[in-house]
Length: 458
Ligand SMILES: [Zn+2]
Ligand SMILES: [Zn+2]
Image (cartoon, rainbow, N blue to C red; front, side, top):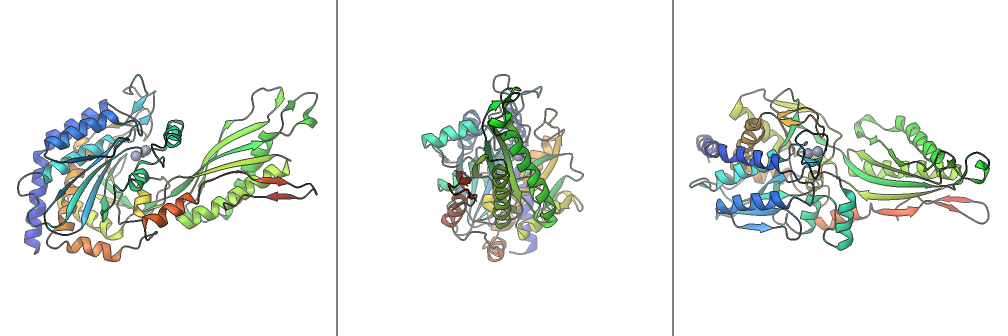
């Protein structure tokens, strides 16, 4: 495949995306007006499924959860590229355009992803679009990226409907990523200086719920009969804050607890104090290591007060590493379509995404595209430039797919040869995240007066 041919194929697919511009913008509008939160995206799934079927795709539904996959094959052997879109919205009832009943609103711009997904699928379904390519393209419409509404998700886990709160992890568990070699994606971000951006990656996290268990008593005449769980929690936070200067900048560690329950009456010593937080870090091993130190500090603070501490750790997201060769291809492709200097390169961000989990198993990119205004997840968030967010994204992703699958898929093979997975198999990955799960009381008071801290996950 020579350069001239490559240019021709890329230009052809971009023209095909452009031909579907109206459809792409219609999808953006429709989903903006019908926001649904994670694992409840049934209307959105039905709507998108119909569009894919009208485009001639055979849709494979995810089953008893929202979402689906649809694949197109070139008929020639080669790698499988997945293009992913997230289905879920957020909750922000204060947003003027939020769903009146549910408070749902696409304040993270995920609706733009379904629009580019349809744009790419429509372009590749057109006659001649697969000429000169090998392998397959899998379009994946995935639920539940945002870690919210946990009560509902836990109820789905209890019923056995889902096994993991994050949609991509659940898709992985259900085998819907089987056969995929690499993943392409974009995410809208407000207030970017340049139209496109990509960083080296982003943090992973462990989500934590913890409860200091003391003893309630009358705050006025019998505080000596109580054990103040709120003070124990306050000591725990102070201990963690004192650990902060041992956190190295390169590890991008974040710990940001909130108190969700700190007592019931001002005239009683609080018997139970509940907190939620994430522990974030830039690598899996650092995440585990720091979490242990935080658990030790929290448990020791409970022991200091004669209280106990229940720790409930749940795997959040894995750190995301943007594949270097795919990132280079992204920058090159944006430059070819929109001119040089349109990609901002940033070092690292401390947000997390369940695409991180996928990046531990296969080459993945999570670049950003401008086009939104206001505050991400906030009540003033709007997608103000859908052409950029949806149509331009579709052009870049479709052009990248063409470049990866051209000829004998040489570029995709180069990506795969250089990729170093964090986990060699899906089983190894699930063993690692399952090992994070922990729920136990961490202070043991022995009869001989010794106190043992049992904060390790064994
Ligand atoms: Zn978000
Ligand atoms: Zn998002």
